[in-house]
Length: 105
Image 1: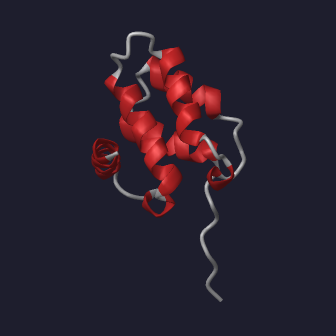
Image 2: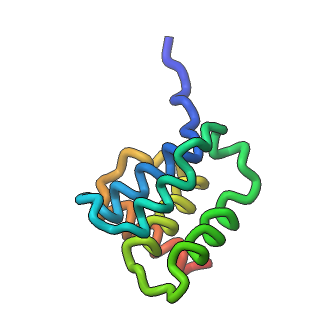
């Protein structure tokens, strides 16, 4: 009997986004964002202000706003908070979709 896929947690969404935006794990800002959200084990659908929390964390981590990898991580995590069905998409596709959704908003 098929079942619905389990809703990812906020931590999982941020982890997938970080992996997509910084596949080598070399960006300290992306690593810091992942650390800030690593214990957030509530389903992403239960987080009413996920986008706001991600944006605030980005601003606190990247004071100059010049980390493209961090911007992409936040964009992808925000996108996946709404489009959980895309969580298994290829990293380049996730970034493209997230940026397109961000531009449309």
